[in-house]
Image 1 (cartoon, rainbow, N blue to C red):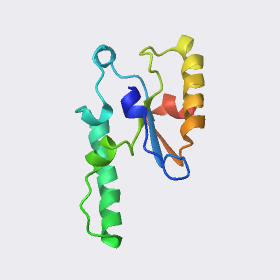
Image 2: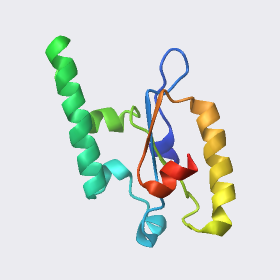
Image 3: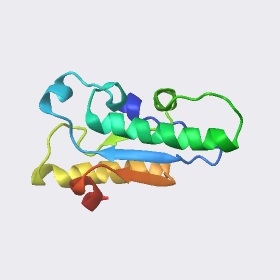
Image 4: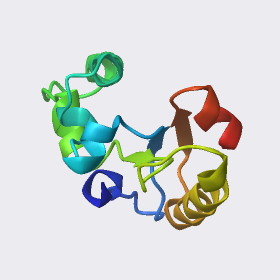
Length: 123
């Protein structure tokens, strides 16, 4: 979890885009799977969207071929789990929110993409 949440930063010590999601299923807590390595529909949609942005940039920029999956692997698409302890619910909201608040202050993202209503309302 820490590996996929450790971002590459800009020269101004900020993160371009931070993606925040909700706790994965219990099986993923026991054997963690990075969002970009999972076969979930959310990760496929996100990578396809990022790939489209990259293609638009390549049209106006240099012709260097860049793959969204490589952008993710290099830390430019950090993903933070709202419930890194693996348990959702009212008892864990406060601790999860405090941890997320501390993380946001540290990385100071320019954009935050929230996956789901609960994450969005918490942010």
